[in-house]
Amino acid sequence: MTIFDKDTWQEIFGSIGQNKLRTLITIIGVLWGIFLYILLSGIAKGVDNGFEQRFERISSNSLFVWTQNTSIPYLGFKIDRKWNIKLNDVETLKMEIPEIKYIAPRIQKGNWGSQGASVTNGQRNGTYNIYGDYPILKVVSQKDIYDGGRFINHLDIKEERKVCVIGERTKKELFSDDINPIGKYININNIYFKVIGIHKFVDEGGGSFADDGDIHVPFSTFKRLYNTGDIVGFLLIAGFDDVDILKVERQVKNLLKKIHNVHPDDERAIGAFNLGALFTRIKNFANGMSFISLVIGVATIIAGVIGIGNILLISVKERTKEIGIRRAIGASPNHIRKQIILESVFLTVVAGIIGIILGAFVLYVINIATQNLEDIPFTNATVPLNYIFAALLMMIGLGTLIGFVPAEKAISIRPIDALRDE
Image (cartoon, rainbow, N blue to C red; front, side):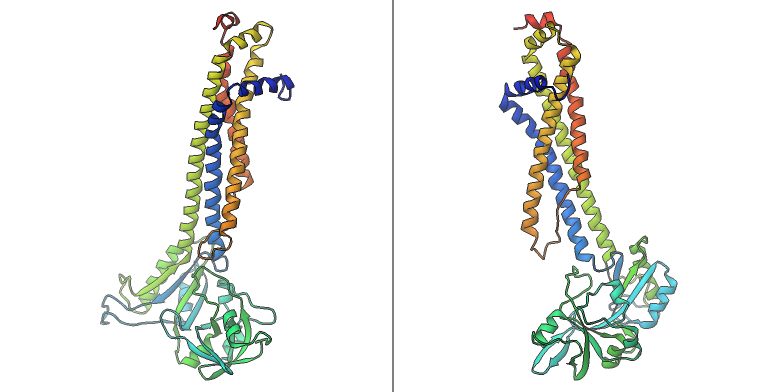
């Protein structure tokens, strides 16, 4: 007997057709298991993809650090003391903490509850967040600049140039559609700045505090404009890919406390947003969800396959006389065994393929329904093909194993006993 033998498949379909309803109900167990596996794995991947897309424009192993009022008196300083990070701290942090790859010192007017800057262009005006930045920001947090423009460079910093990079919303509100702002001037707090670039707005998940109305100016120019000296508003720190960013955060906080005479146990004195730790938790959540989907799917598939084994045992019992006749006219035990195992594998694989198709269809519907949702970090819910092939191979293996039970039951019946069965 071969797999492609016509008579073999006629016998298999004849056996299945004797009780269609019972067979259908039984294979639903396998179908439901693979469906759950595909669906949950796809959703986990969609969540993972969604967060990766949100944070792809900023180093995933990064953190933000800023100062807050102290909560513990220390070395003669009173409680609730205001203090600031200084530019000199940047070099100290880089030298003392080798796990740090980049540091982008930033200072801002606007955001975090402060009043933005008044900006005008002729009769048009508005209030926008102004950031004093270094060129390193473009490395740590990618800024896409429209053709014809550029971001702040080192010469801008050195010469304290009055240049700026504006956001898309700023362009729309301060310039008419037929005017290219590059090379034009805008008035920021009564000082004219030349527009050198327009940055595209990409939602970065809030991690970079970005807005489509932000205006970037050289840090040195900002310092001169608002007389902020060497004060830094906050630090954007990126660690090397293989470092523990939580450890880096602790090192940064401890070193800054030491430099500025802040109590080592004062947890309120320094604020931080650890994007790397958040990203790790998200990855762990997605991996955990994938593992749960695997456990649920495999458990349900096994239960369904056992159900197929049970229905084949019942089928063997009902076909005892038929098997006896076939044995009496020359059918070998091996022939009977292969047919029943093939029937088990066929039912298992058919149920699995239907489950995969249904799961893929539901994921397709979910992708369509969520493709325009900006508030939900979810995109491209898919299951890798190797996962699907692995599931099919597992079902073939389980179908073969479970088929041995009714197959051995069938060939254990002596032809003479089978012929006497009523």
